[in-house]
Length: 196
Image 1 (cartoon, one colour):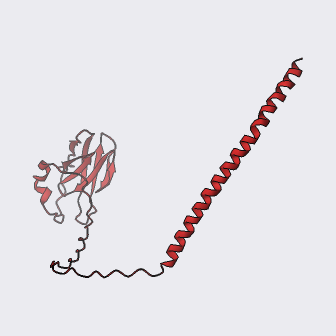
Image 2 (cartoon, rainbow, N blue to C red; image 1 turned 90 degrees about the vertical axis):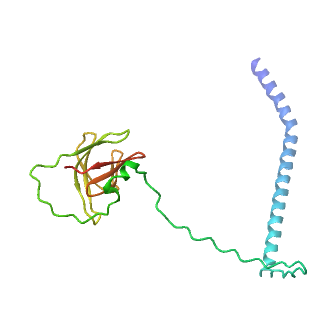
Image 3 (cartoon, helix red, strand yellow; image 1 turned 120 degrees about the horizontal axis):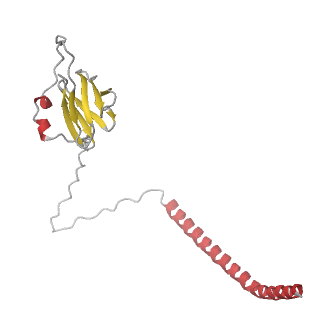
């Protein structure tokens, strides 16, 4: 008996679907007509714009205004072009006032002078980066040609040799002078004197 009930329900469900079918078909036809009308309007707009621009093959002549009489208006002066903008490299870091007071900060580099070899090896210079690791400057080789190098040990690690602009472990070599080197950690710049 359950199969008969099931068949009966399916046939009743089919009648409801058949009743809804003409409404769904009418809805689809109405949507298609609206889409077709929209596409037609769009095509008409594009064609009219193309025709307007095709008629304008030559630019229109500027209208010649007649001067106003009796008002004494002078013609407008041409506006000068703005001056060209100079390309300047952005600043990398700010050096504190105490570093600017150092005599080597403003001195011009002089060629290296041959000095006699010291009897004892130079003692490394130590500094601590503000908010950073301890830095030990073990060697400074200055060259006026720009090939200067420094040997640093950062945070007790093995020494590394760096050039101006190189960075390791967050410490960047900013400037190498004969008697000192400027280093940067984050936004802080600090100086270490050459080993003595």
